[in-house]
Image (cartoon, rainbow, N blue to C red; front, side, top):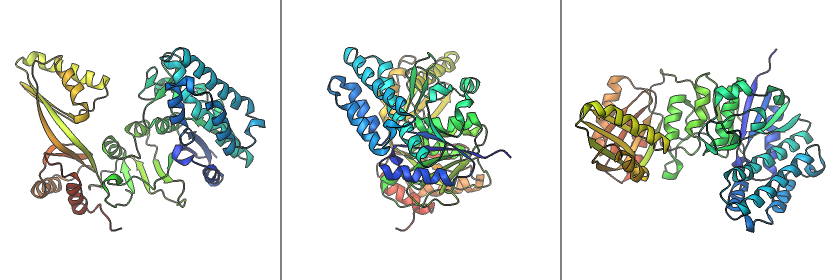
Length: 440
């Protein structure tokens, strides 16, 4: 009988102290089937390495400090089966710092330095599990053929290439794989962006056809409202892939859009669980295929300060070509376009205020003049598409209750914009009307 396979991802928030290792071990000991682990660096380690990369001459104590820190988590590592690897990683940090002291702009040395945090973490976690009789072993993501799309800093894993070159022989027992980095398309080490270790975990799951992915966090699940707004709510029990991507693009600190994408095409479920909470039979939030029979608003995303950039285009023949170039340049600069309206003779893009300056400079390359229209907030009412009657009734009610207008409607969200800056008050009204808020 084929064992079930689960990819567990443990981030830095789950690697704060030695007791966290005991919790991780307890999870793996009692989890059915084979477990594959993906780990981030120990809490605070990446920040220290980042500072050292910027001031390498003043980082002389770093190697000793990191050695002591990781040996506190894993006493005996220095004399265990992975002692040579541990010493090699520390030596690599030393060499990277020396190289950066001579050439501060050597990005390959910077990447090797930053990746050392995940390498040390994988050694620590594997050592702790080994002591408890779990057949764990550390695995470098690039050593098993994880290819990224790009060089230096890459947006995503190249699943197609990785599938061809993945070394499955290294995935026996309980592998503890380094998150956040892999081999760039130039053969050098490359790093992923924000949420990179989560993306590593879901990419690994795609490549090995895992049964599920569990992201272990220090929170209980995905909340329908960002906690920063101070409105109490309970985790959303189920989000479809499309709903999760929409919410992650806007306002949830728990998910990044790239996390979900590797799972969508093959339908692997994703669970969000709290490492420090009670391990329940069912996760507080499960993300999986879009269930269109569940047609209701599940969450509200919020993006303060958006701007519409509009241009006139007298030449209809050139309009489509210029529009395409703008969108390509937006993508190259990682500028999200929250809405696009293109009519004969005019185009309007909706972007964040934060991206306005760069967006306008791109638009000005192809169009003579542009106008801007500022809004205080954009809301996204996240949920699979409502029936037409319910959708019309909801929009009409919200326009009556709030100073909002509809920006767009798609299969997973109704986006609204408002000139008002009273975001908290508007969110409270939305949360109560949509029955998302709970009494404390």
